Image 1 (cartoon, rainbow, N blue to C red):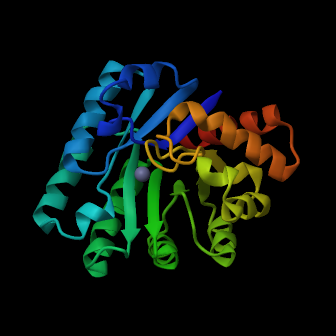
Image 2 (tube, rainbow, N blue to C red):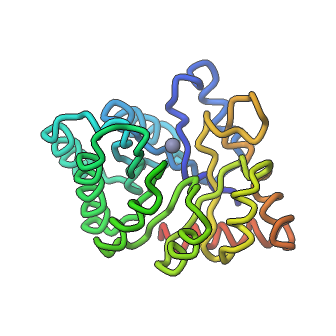
Length: 242
Ligand SMILES: [Zn+2]
């Protein structure tokens, strides 16, 4: 049983063959992470059409850094009304401006996830420490750090806080993710593609069907059996999303 906890099958890159990509994913759940107001609505529509597409709603920091606060609040109200499966994509990305504005919005989404008792799927770039600071301050629970590129010290800190790491396909060539997987407990790992991005096959569009490549690599790095890794990750998924 394969799961892709962070994917974007609503992306325009899938306009020509979306149905095939979903139906031939080999996954039991594709958690589509809405990154904008428009993408949240597209995620809702797609989840109605395909039960294996699960709806995560959020606003990516590439939105929150320049959206009027009123629009962020309206989106949160919309999300509350539309029964999300998870909250995401949310987080901090200091490649963009206005860190204070990003942090304010991030805190609102953490509160929403806590209020609804849902897992939250968190993006961090050039802000890994700040993301952990905010999550810890807010006593966040059910946290999934997506594609976490923070230093190993931060990996240890996140694990102590009980957070999960969703491992992208680039682990096949990324020493950082191989090291992360080696350090972290198998009970804290999940799999993601971030499709159409972060393909394990350089230069190719990514798809949920590549999840088994991540499982293979995790098994190799941890010296475990592939089936055992697959089962453990599925058990983690069930524990978090029950
Ligand atoms: Zn993403």
